[in-house]
Length: 363
Image (tube, rainbow, N blue to C red; front, side, top):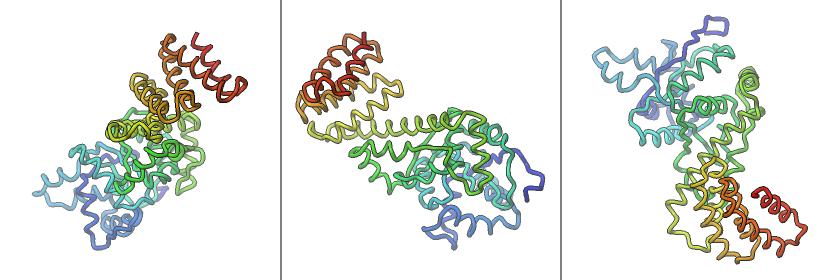
């Protein structure tokens, strides 16, 4: 099909079981270094060339009628959308989907590699992406976002991927953020030892600078974003979802390792505090409070009761109480923080002024 041909504007709704994708790795042309693009060019397109259809449709039409039960086990209406970058290694994509499949065996993946015909260059009108496509995401109600490599994910620089992520947020779909297992060890190490670096690397979102393979697609997505919500707004919506996921990961590690870390572990104290800040930002005040308290207790032992680090933690906990309108709890913490900062930094230091301002707002 070419761009001048009549375009079917319906959404291809077929999804496939994980086993369909795993079977591709047993093709004689497959090797473990292949990207999704490589699998498309070397395996999918040659197989489906004669019928000029999607791989999911090819499976439906190729299996004999007496095997209809088998067809239904392999192909059915999609109920989870796979958001990925075509430059990812196909083995990494499978790894991520296998992790999600461990949560539910009922997933039929909408993976464009196999659910969309790879023959022809037909394009959809701009409004299709903010109507039909978004409705399809809402109907599936599940989106898996694959991050690889986690510390510089291609996904967060691609215009299509960010649009898909936005659609999942806008439709309030269940968002599953996953990375290949081989990368999880380094992610957890960084999460526990340099939490701020995680935020920096994964929350540097700018839809306005995101790229697409075709410049026309890039321009179309940018225009759709501007018309529908605005670049700054969509950036913030995506960042908030990633921060929510990071907070969940941080909480999981805190729960798993709470008894392992001793009271002198500076990194664990920082992890408690930074996860608490994210939870406070998300309005989860009751979940943030015990993290702030334990972080404060730890820095008191690590740095001493009158250290600047303690003053900072006091201010965070006081700010939480002020937000909850618990002013009688906030006031003594603010005052103690001010006294410590004046002693260590001098009465004219900007941090003292900030804390005095916070105290004033508590009255």
